Image (cartoon, rainbow, N blue to C red; front, side, top):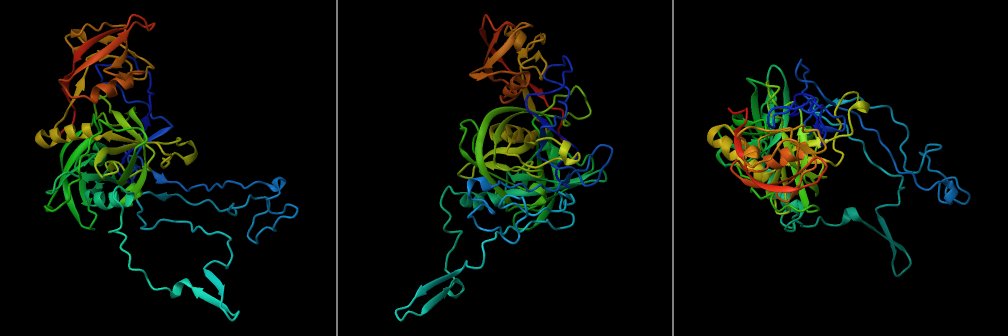
Length: 471
C-alpha cells in the first residue's frame, strides 16, 4: 500500500488527441506505458482504486570476457571454475533462481525479502601474517583491536549527504491515509512547529471523502491529521497534525537559480520505508510533466501539468510529497512523480525507479501552500487561449474573448514559440510555463505563423483562476 490509490501515470509531452478544450482545461492525458506516478497503488482494490504490488526483480549480471580472451574460467591455462559456478554462465552470474512472488509494497507482512550478496573470495580474508625476528609467524587479528572512539555524527563534513540527512530527516514525515475505499502511504515535509505539513494532493485526498490521516514522525511518534486545503491543479495539499508543538520546520530554498548537474538529496518513505535518503543530481529543468487522474469529477477540469525539476535521485512509490533538497539541506522541490518503463512486463503492476523522478519546484509550492493555509484554496495563472496540449507545437486554436492573449493581440492560428526567454515546443510546455508564474505577472510572448515565419513579441498580463479544490 502506498500513497497512490489508483494506477496513475505521468506522460512526458504526450496525451490523447481529444480536440480543443476550454482554456487550459484539458482531458487527462492517457496513461502512458513509459511513465508512472511516484505512488504505488492501494492494498485493497475497489472500482476506483486499483491495487498495485511490487513485483519480483530479475537479477542480471555483467559477464566477464569469455574464454576466447584467455581470462575466463575453463580457458587454456586459466583457473578452474569455482565449485558454485554454473556451466555456461558468466563469472559472477548467480545460479538460476526460482521466480519470487510479488509482495505488497506497503509491507503489510512487516518484512522485506532481501538477497544476501556474497562473493567466492575464499577464507584468506581477515588475517594479516607477518614474521618475527626469530622466524616464527606472528598473527594479528582485527577482532583483537580495541573499538575506536569515533563519532560519525560529529564528523559529518559540511555539505555531505550525511550532514544533509541529519539536518532534514526530522522535517520529513510519513503519511498514512485510510478509508473504507482505500488505504495508502506517502510522504510530507514539516512547514511549522505546530504541525502544518506540505504534501501532494494525491496523497492527502487519495482515500476519498471521510478518509483518516495519520502522520509518523522521525522520532517514532505519530499524530492524527486533518486537511487544511488542497489544489488538484498543482497537486499540492496542506494538512495539520494535532497535539504537536515542537516539530522542526524544513528550511525553504529557491528553485529559481537551480542548475543542471547540481547535487540533490531526496528524502521520503518509498514502499513504506520511512526516512529513506537517496542522492543524485538535477538532470533537467522546466520539464513539462502531464498527469492523469487528478482532475476530479469534472472532465473539463484542468489537469495537473507540472513544470518539474527532473532528478536521477532514486524516487519510488511512497516518495510522493517528500523532500528534494540541495547540498545545504534547503527544500528545492516536492517529489511527485516517476517515469517507468511501462507495465507490460510487470503483470500490470508499476515498476520502481529508473532514474527519472520529478519534483514540483519549491517556488511554486511556497506560493500554493501559503494560499491554502490562508484561505483553503489556491489559484493558478492562465494566458487565455485554447490549444491541444499533446501537439508538438503550441498552436493557438482560439484566443478567449477578453482574455489576456486576446487583449495582447495574439490571433488564432499562430504558434507560440517563447515565453520570456523560455523556448516553447509543445502545448504542455506552454501550460507548464504559464502555471509557473503567479496571476498578475507580465510575460513576453513570442509567436510566429504556422510556417515559423514573421515572429512577433507582445506583452501579456496573466490572470488568475481558482483551482477546483479546497477544504
